[in-house]
View (cartoon, rainbow, N blue to C red):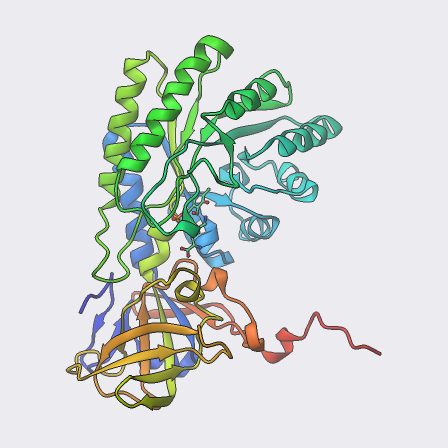
Amino acid sequence: MYFYGTTGVNNNGHLEIGGVDSLELAKNFGTPLYVYDVALIRERARGFKQAFEEQQVRAQVAYASKAFSTVAMVQLAEEEGLSLDVVSGGELYTAITAGFPAERIHFHGNNKSREELEMALEHQIGCIVIDNFHEIELLKDICSEKSTKVNILLRVTPGIEAHTHDYILTGQEDSKFGFDLQNGQAEEALAEVLPYDYFNVLGLHCHIGSQIFETTGFLLAARKIVEKMTEWKQKLAFEAEVLNLGGGFGIRYTNEDEPIPPAQYVSAIIKEVKLLIDQNSLQMPEIWIEPGRSLVGDAGITLYKIGSSKDVPEVRKYLAVDGGMSDNIRPALYQAKYEAVLANKPLAQTSDTVSIAGKCCESGDMLIWDLPLPEAGKDDLLAVFCTGAYGYSMANNYNRIPRPAVVFVENGNATLVVKRESYEDLIKLDLPLK
Ligand SMILES: Cc1ncc(COP(=O)(O)O)c(C=O)c1O
Ligand SMILES: N[C@@H](CCCC[NH3+])C(=O)O
């Protein structure tokens, strides 16, 4: 059995997270329930920051808030001195409402609207990561209309195939994101933004994908970008002040995953960039990264109550929980795998192999196939580990299932940070026919 962070078994023989009994959490806040181990998020954030400090380079660690964006989470990121990556007006609004310092917000997206860009400028956020030619024109238009100067990064696509699920690859040539580095698009874009008075071109950005376990892809991306930076110093008199290498650092979901510690990614990246920069006589840029999953993923646990079960003799036993693809779409979307235990008896001997079904009207709504469990059934509490990233943030109302509440636990205290959706919430935007 593998426990993350402060998760363990207490004297009652129950699963405990952040010093709080999981059965108490289920009783007080209901199920399904997303529970976050705040100490573990802090540990992960400090791990990345410290890794840069050890390398003695100027750096920013920006939390990619798409992984899990709520007011409380953004405030926690602020407490830990992180910067913030947002990718929509909604994430930006959340950050601003949470009181996050605007100058530490970076705005991403491959199709930002005029309204979203105007909002970003209005709040004077730290920088806009320009993704395409359409956006250059749009932003030029807005900046000149408002006589406002803005910091920008250019997102480039380095042509790297990282080893991960196809749907979460982003750095390969055939990608919807960014200016292609190899075919001249990136250079064309840079030549277009550099002379424009309202743009302060800080540097370059790339993100090669998500749930990556090796440093190779990051190093290759850095190499390809620094090669171009060397050319662009000659051709365009451009030297990047910032090199943002994105997020994508992998985490452990099951024992098939073997992540490396944050410090190892960081030191490998910094070593490579320093070497390349020295070889090419460039100035060392500030290094930015954007971890999402690796900051919050393993700090999240979802608690579900088990309800019905079904035996298909000689084939399998299904146990159904009170949530499913509406609160965790990752198994259906990416065949993602998870581990789980019974929170009311986590140490009991496993005696059965069961498959955990959700409650949505969809055969593909399966959370875990072939999970070893002790004898389990109605009213047992199932704890699914590692649901902190892209669980709540990709939750949906399929079958009009209300989204679960979110609770932060730390030092024996539980704090409700997102209320459970009610049926009233579900129809609050509906208008009657007459
Ligand atoms: C531009 C960008 N930055 C950062 C991230 C965060 O990725 P991860 O959660 O894998 O660290 C993503 C998502 O893949 C992204 O698209
Ligand atoms: N949402 C995805 C990853 C995509 C990250 C955003 N570019 C996941 O759950 O793994």
